[in-house]
Image (spheres, rainbow, N blue to C red):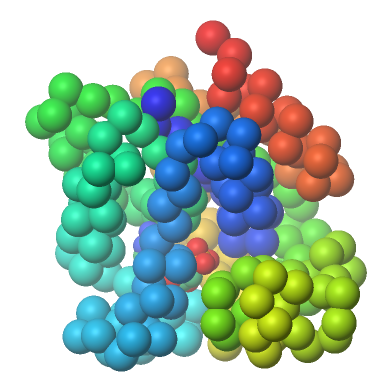
Length: 215
Ligand code: AMP
């Protein structure tokens, strides 16, 4: 099954995708993390992407689509996966549909997780990430056991450049302009399921699983 988790930055897609992957056994593919890895490793793609990434802008479609399709071609995605943070433009959605159709596959469900804008901003600006393993914490909702240290690997926690308040605001604007039109794209195709993201992590996870497993 191919599932897209869709919603504004800060709505909890990443956290929910990890939980959904554990419950369903599907691989979790996140373009944000693929970019962060490329930036950490200072690959050619990483150097190109960093310019956009640090400003809270979308990385141009041709880089993003090529990177995602290459990841999708790996064996662990042959029977499905959870996509988190992709697609984010109509061009990306069309490229994904085309690539899947060529192999007789389709997107099964798109789950749109929603939350009010004020809540999104506060979630984004309280977020801390591990430099080493990429785990994400939140000073209010999911603090680490020891301040500044990752529970998973002991790595140093830092605030992502794009989670700083001004950039977070810009990311929400970019979402409204470039990504929100995808809601209609998937609604028209009968794929869109909507769930309320303004609830506890556990409640959202339960509703998400029910949406994905429902017929
Ligand atoms: P995220 O962690 O999903 O919020 O993504 C962080 C940043 O990575 C975004 O602000 C973009 O700069 C870049 N990015 C991630 N996914 C995409 C995408 N599908 N298209 C373009 N840029 C992306």
